[in-house]
Image (cartoon, rainbow, N blue to C red; front, side, top):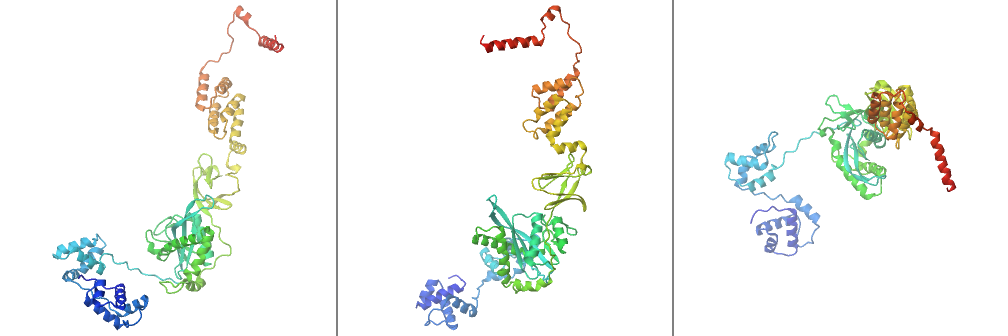
Length: 534
């Protein structure tokens, strides 16, 4: 019979059969054990006080007795095992070395060939499992404990989805996670986005609602919402977050790129936040983000905060009461988070676009980039740190400008609307030109404004010429709407000689000429005859 290790569950089954008055052979047959092995373990059961005449003990109690008193079964090794044992260190070095490590099976084949061992691969697999060769040695981590009030660690993690109250569709939800490095008290906030405004707002909420104070510094990774450009020596902090740090008198400490161990205390809490979100979502299916965040704050303090921490051995809330005294006091007024964005001023019209609105700057800023800061309802435009202009954003207004930024002609155009300005310019070229531009602007003036402006540019070079009005009339009668067509018509007219006199006429021809009134009188007589029924 092959060797098979004895465990507590096997002993429990032997013990039950023993109490049911089965003999030694029946127990050995039922459990597929050797009779001598069964007899040996029955003696050990009696030695720990489990008599055959007494009632059966509870399973948990049985496990306590046999686990505390019975030695681990001796492992029987054959000669092949001993051969492998001589090369354990070499096998471990081949598997765990930093450069070009080998898989356990490959390392076994190397050793077997190098020392001409007659050992089967099945034996090696059992040996590797027992000696821990099939897995790399765990990294030795140095746990750094910090004094209270020194550091807060931050991280983000995707936790699930939740229905949007407006669109009614599921949208991704992220967890803003924070933990005090000394007391290990966490703070979770579920958010829809990870942009700079949301991140800075979560930091402010953490300071006021979570800890009611701030540590000396905050450690973050290199997400774009916090760090514009990662750098080992000179990282560029996002301006929204930098304003928060300056206002509360704390410092931002970005981790080294790719080094999650720099904020190891918060890394293990991201899965905790994910499970908490999913649990709260199941327990409160109709709750929105605000309610879930309030319940998450309560859970951090009342559940996690009162549970003994596995590393420190102290409940986080208990340690927090000590750390609270070391936190920096917060200003009375809560900071209003602003969103910063670098934008370009359009080279054509002196406007920049922000928040789906347009804001003007003087002409010298055309084609240049400026920094825009938005903190409702104020938009401020900066050149580095120098304030250039600011506007108050009002509901329903999408364009903001100052008259002194533009010449007089442009101001008139902007005051009356672009199509109205186009019609005003067309009237300066005559009624026929105005009628043609009016035709081009139909039926949607703003959609056709670019064509109309092109027509005006063409007219500007010809409007003083004697053929201009005639060409405009013909262009209107033909429905011309393209500047290129009008330009060709005007250029052709400019090349034709202008007739200044009258054609010669014979006496017979002159006798046939009638004044227009003659034909109008005839037309009137015909109409009168039809009316009288003649």
